[in-house]
Amino acid sequence: METEQQQHQQLQVDLGNLMAFNPHHHFPSLPSSRENLVKECLKQGTELVQAIADNLFNLPATEDVDGPIVKLPPPTTRLPREKHIPKPKPPTKWELFAKARGIKNRKKDKIEYDEQTGTWKRRYGYDHANDEDNVPIIEAKMTDEPGEDPFAKRRSEKKKHVEKQEKNRLQNLKQAAKFGALPSHVQLAATALPITGTQAMPKKVSKDELGNVAGMAATATASGGKFDKKLAGEKPAKHSRKYRKFLPVVEGTGIGKQEKEQTDKVLNQLLSKNSHEILNVNKAVNMYNVKKEKKKRNREEKSSATSSKLKPKKQFKKPLKKGSSKKGKAK
Image (cartoon, rainbow, N blue to C red; front, side, top):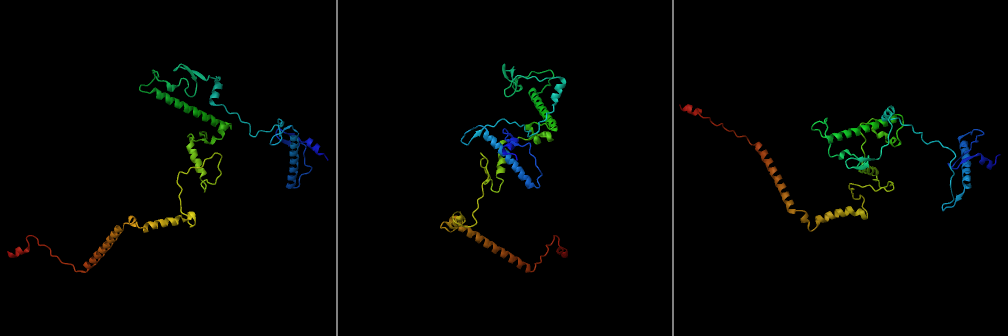
């Protein structure tokens, strides 16, 4: 049988990656069950870990409060990439046009001479040179239409140019998405871009809106976020509304006596010496007398109505007209 030292010599240890493997390992016979296979794998794994530990303790170490510290050598094994190699991006329309016409990119200086102030300023950014918005006077041309505002025309042309550039940028991203070569900073947000087919640009969420959404999510539990785990630096959620307070159902000591005290307070106010200030007795008596007289009057009206129905109806004679028959008889 091979000694333990010979077995360690067969192992290949890469301390740079803290990795070890046995290229000559083979099963003499296939394991009969899964349990035997697991036992054999654990046995081989233990030998590999032991080999790594032995090699680590053979390295020169420096003493520290936490223990000996060793410096690992550079790795000798080339491991495969975690992710696939990025695909080259397809050329844009401008790159294809420049290649066909033989146009080469020429690097421009960051500083440019400003004709308005006579100084050198940055080419792009805030307070850049030859800013069209800072021009006080625009010379008229023969082709200008009368009554047209040249400043408004320049602003509209600039806006159209920006929209065209944005459209071209989105078209380039769409073309790159077909080849699977989107930039890394766009891959996570690719579903929110207009290149997926939506018409409008996604709305930028403000800081206050994010805070409101985070507060709603934090207080969406049954306890209102009271017993949830808090992140480092997370502030407690602000409650804009007031909590409703209810009296306890079961009477007890301390807080349980609030309901009894409240009812006693109301009764004491009603039965106190100064109760006439709370209850107007004269007004209550007058209201009672008015209601009593009203009921009495209604009864009398009902009784008079029933008695009038039983009396016989009177017969009235019709009035005589002018030129009655008595004059005729006198003739």
